[in-house]
Length: 134
Length: 494
Image (tube, rainbow over all chains, first blue to last red; front, top):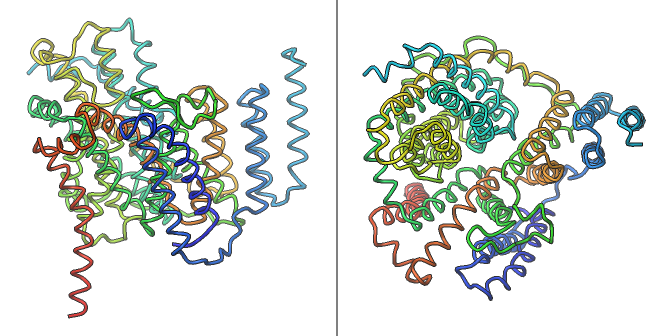
């Protein structure tokens, strides 16, 4: 077991959940809504602290977040934004597919992201005019 | 006797069964499109039909969907259904070694065997097993759920502590939303979306599908895995070699399926855990591509189908969510599942039994066909395949409720899954925690409230032999490995 950012995150989640469960336990005791989440949160907190105290601090050679992953996550965020503003699902999905595939295959962000954004804006504009949204 | 042959004397029934199995196999392979959704759509579609063709179609979809979930689990590590999570643990590593075809063929064969054994249990032992299901109390369900949680050890290949943390996070995520008994809102942060809790299908697709895609896209120049050509159907001696494992897994599947609310998801995980504990010398270690890790869960989750029909037909109590919908479908068509069902409607009972067996063989036909074509997916470059997986994951998440929030949560779980993989945290225990949290909590609260206090509830464990057996099993699961390790250490020192 090693000490790392995710262990710290899980411990923090556990501590926060324990704090959130205390009022529920005070209200209904061990037969209420707080019992199971409190138990799970306690396991997370204690386990995380044990991992932090007894774990080895080995440096991870691979960066957790590199440029490729950041681009992929950004593309997915853009996809969700397109869905939320009303772009039809199939169009948004096709654009995500196109943008990511071209980016990953070509290996360079300059070649595909701007074109993907231009293509997205153009399609949105066209559909907006057709459906009289714009 | 003629009732049992009706499926073969009326060809249209067989046709509808085949259509159902075909649709089910391909629906089950798509994450987010569940058997429950498919069967509930068919209830309204078949409203005006006669009972028998409608039942054959829904039965076919049910059997097909349970098998279909394993295809995407093996090829892409995206389980099509929660019951296929355990299949993917060893199925996907086998596909990465170029053995996707053989693995999918093994899954198809074991699905057939499991379904047939479940149907035989339904035919021969329905009255006996239904009496067993009535004897289960809240404390027994709680102990079963705890037994399920103890399979975390089997699902955490390298570090038990990481598996426990992952399972605890899963239970916490499963507690988001309204408490199942008191309806108190927990961890909703004022969001209407979170009132209903986080769907475990969204978590499943995110952790396995999007998480895997993010992990692979993060790397440059990943090479596709060339699949083996040649024989994919295992020789008969290979199939016969695994008979004891198959029978054990089928028994686990049938008994878990008989328990209302338990279902194929838990059966598959328990069978995987049992295989890991009982198979002494697998050719490959579990978690790295042991074929036994595919045989056990696939047999169990299909055997659970027959098991789920036992309380449904003999008591009118659904064994799982799909049988709950089938009860409604039978009621619409004028039948009343319950204690007198087998005597009042023997033709439907016999149709279910023969339909399950026929559907099993049809699953083999549709399951084996096209395997070589599907295995080509593994040979695609990851730069082309992974974006398709991300889109498929988004489709699956959106298909649940047509809600963008599900897609956002799915990508969120995907990012979490990517980091969990990066730091060596297994994702299967987290899904296990989400699935079991409801069963754990509902039965725990019921047990404490029915007995008046926590102490009295603990005392009630010793009132029934079933509870005592279910209590001894988890204790043995924890103690036996410790004793075994101590004995190994003692032998080494000697």
